[in-house]
Length: 477
Image 1 (cartoon, rainbow, N blue to C red):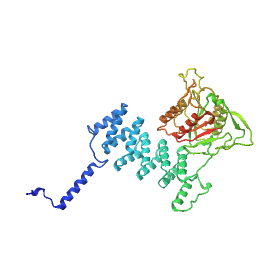
Image 2: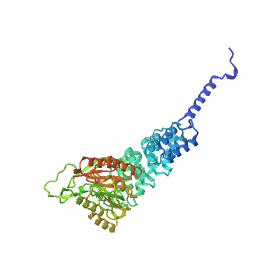
Image 3: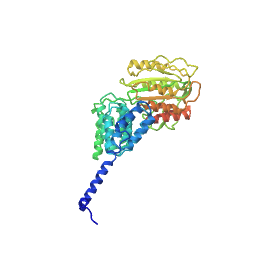
Image 4: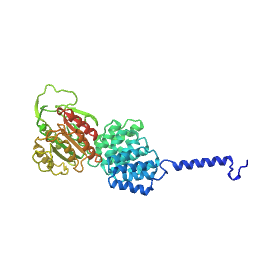
């Protein structure tokens, strides 16, 4: 049998041709490089996704995101990044985030890094920072996470710091954290500054006041030497004692106090006549601290001291006024009181209680006030005038609190489970949902303070609300 010369190849050439064909096939079908186009082409896919999102047809948008991801093409992921991760829909954002987090292609990941480093949409960045946290073993992901610390938007910085704390990578994170602390420490102290300190302490289990001390410690740690810490007098950084509210330190310059003034706040509790100051910073995120009437924590019981019955509202007024007095002059603060209605410091007194729960009047929502001597005096008189009455609409209080611009930290004090004016229970999950929706991209920290005597429902709500929003929960006895 004859074989045509046209199809005869020497063995070496045949092997080389096969290897070349295999290489081209792998390159053609490599993930993130090239795949089948979506039906109708890329322009049609972009137009359809954009139209679905603008029309709030998020079911269709989710289907299109799945189809674009199935192409395994960089162009498809670019469309997902551009349109699907903008805070338009909770479910759409979650689908887009999960889809991107599952990607291993370096080409697609590079697009994500660029979106974090150069993108302008704050909501997109916050979603993608959660993706970077999932890629914590990727050095480029950590680099992008550290780069977010320099963002001009504090919501982005808060998010990045929270994920850095959870990743707990001391070797990779200490240098960029110290650099950022040094850049910010000569400015007025804000929550970003204190969150940087908190993150450094979490990673190292150390506690220093200024960046120079942190740098000396870390330099010595890396060199295997005992760190040299300069005396405090050599630092040009001005330090001050931070005030606290029921043992939770005020570590921000934009703070809102939300105070329950429902009828149950009239109830007297047994307190020590000369209370000791609670310890600073008891507990951490996810942990509940019980503060006894004398200010001690845990199961300690006062002995040999006199006690008296003091209404809860009186205890709260005393503590709040002490906290306000200690606020530095650069801090901006707000105070809200709530029962089944809402009132604000700086606004007219809340209207009289309504018999019909469907009719709820509100005071106008003011901005924050500078902690000047004059404003503190006005706040002192306003707080003294608070009088308990009505029901406990915690859901309204949380919702209205987020209407105040600029706040990044909330202290919520309550002594009861949520109820409406008819004394009907309000599901605690409703309060958590309000905070989840309003705070999704705001990233405010919520600390909760509750009176233990109010029962297990209120206690659990305080724990859940603080845990969900990166805060602390303190239960008073």
